[in-house]
Amino acid sequence: MSRRTTIILDKEVYEKLVAESVRRYGTARAMSKLVNELLRRALS
Image (tube, rainbow, N blue to C red; front, side):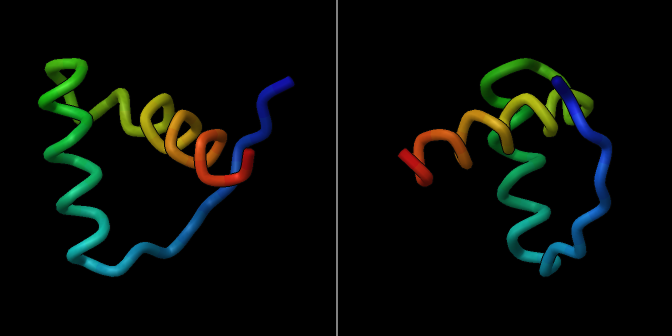
């Protein structure tokens, strides 16, 4: 089940996430998908 939340990112972190989201998915709107993937990998 998905939960909506707000996190405060440092500018540099945000810019890297946007760039990676655009690289992988062609849009910054996929940032939630990217963050979930990265967190799953980091927490496993």
